[in-house]
Length: 227
Ligand code: AMP
Image (cartoon, rainbow, N blue to C red; front, side, top):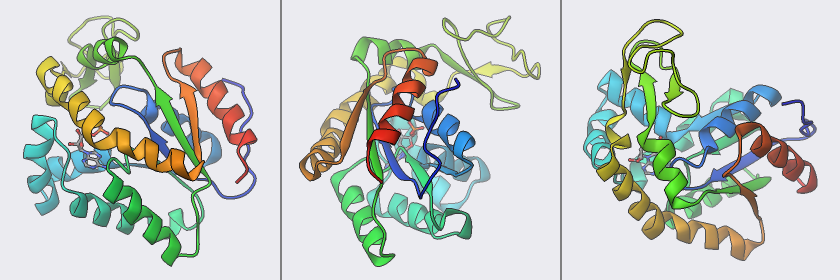
C-alpha cells in the first residue's frame, strides 16, 4: 500500500458507510499513515461496555439488538474525545455521525471551535457483500485480532494465529442482528449522506474491492479534495 496521502495541513475527516463497508480498516490505515487520531465510536462503546461504565451499561442493550445508541450519549462521548490535545488539529471519525442530529451536533462542535470538516468520505458496498463480510468475521477474545473465514482466515477456524486465543463471533455479527443493523442504517444513516451531499462535500468511493485498492482510491480522493 504505497499510495501517497497528503500529510500537509489538518485532516478532519468523517468516514461514512454501512456496517461492513471497511471504514474501520481504512480509517485505521490512514490514521497510522498520517499519525493522527482514529476515533471509532463502535470501538469506544465496546470499551465502555467491557469496562462496565455507566455509558457502557446504557449502550449494551442497544448494541446487542443492532440498534443505535441514543444520540446524546454518543455526541457527548465524541465531543469529549475530540477536545483532547492529541485531536486538536486532525482526526478521522469512523462510525460517527450516524444520524442527522449527530451530523448537526458535529457541525456545532466544529463551529464553536472555529473549525470545519476537511473531508467526508462514503464507502459504498452492495448488501450481499456486506452480509458476507460481517457474518463471517471472527474476533480473538484475547488479543482482539480480527479474522475472516473467507478473506483472512486463521489456520484453525476457532483459534487465533496471533496469540492462540479463542475466536468468537461478535454478538452483533449474527445474521439476524446484521439485518437489523442494515435496516437501521437505511432508516437513520442514509439521510446523513444526503445531508453532506447537499453541502457538496461528499466523496464516494467503491468499497467493494480489496483493502489495498480502496486505500489507493482514498489516498487519491484526499489529495483531490481541497482541505
Ligand atoms: P460499529 O462497530 O461502528 O459497527 O458500531 C457497533 C455498534 O455501536 C452499532 O451497531 C451501534 O449500536 C453503536 N454505535 C456506534 N457508533 C454509533 C453512533 N455514532 N451512534 C449510535 N450508535 C453507535
